[in-house]
Image (cartoon, rainbow, N blue to C red; front, side, top):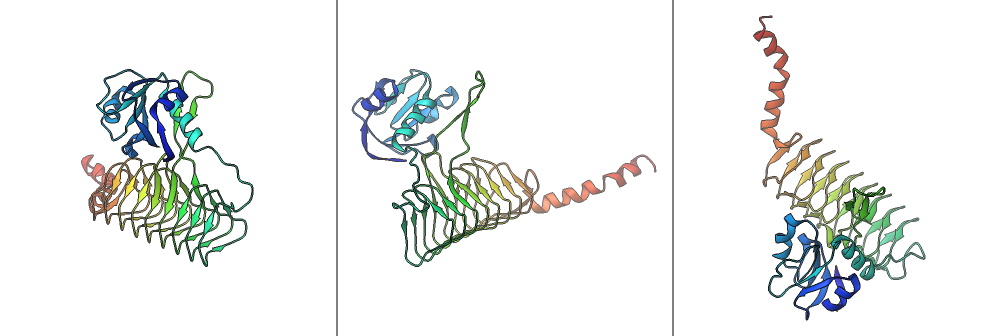
Amino acid sequence: MKLNAPLAVTEIAAFIGAELVGNDQLMATGINEIHKVEPGDISFVDFEKYYNACLQSAATIIIINKKVDCPPGKALLVLPDPFSAYVKLVKRFRPFEPATKPISDSAVIGEDTIIQPNVFIGNHVRIGSNCIIHPNVTIYDNTIIGNNVIIHAGTVIGADAFYFKKRADREVMYDKLESCGRVIIEDDVEIGAGCAIDKGVSGDTIIGRGTKFDNMIHIGHGTVIGRNCLFAGQVGVGGKAIIEDNVILWGQVGVSKDLTIHKGVIVLAQSGVGGDLEAGKIYFGSPVEDARVKKKELAWIKRIPEMWEKLNGK
């Protein structure tokens, strides 16, 4: 998320109650998770095994729970609970903005776009031309939708990320990481009925041009989906996955988080994707393997009773 105006690191430190280590002349221009950071961004880290990745990232200002050597040109904001400090910043710069009507006055809707009854369009939404938004669609704040997009009934665009920090010493154990990202839907996309596409925690969930979704599909926070992909019913994709162009996921495929499905992959129905997939191949199974190999394996499994009888002289 980009800030509306640069903010002095000294002001940030005072606001969250942190000790400032390093360059005290810096100006912050954005707030981002570690995998999305750009120069000028504020990020946070609260597990020692991720310290190096965060310190060596593009982030300029890092909220951290231990005083360590500060990389040149950066600033560290040291305090016991970086997670809560980060959430405090998000709430300040992207506060919840209650709706006052079904279609916000700040929404921009393009020429010849049709909005059916009972659609909710939140604050600062932009929708292009020649779109059809069917009944009971909900479009959360800051969503961007291109031209020639069709969204079918009951779909929800831009709900919060499913991202929580466990506090095992409390009765209510999970703290919410507030979402300040967006959903961007490019031109010529069609989204089926009853789908849910979550916004990024701090960056963008992106659906590429020409991609088509069936009904009842879930896309997790920060996922980036390429052009001309085809997803059948009940596909679920975890947060921060990258799915390149021309990928086909057939019905009930489950895709884990933080992985890449490369260009032109086809995953057959009811498969489970737990890691990166090589471009241009067909996969099947849970966990997925090359479909030809997996089908041969299943054929041999069916012969186990026969082989068992032979081994036992029956």
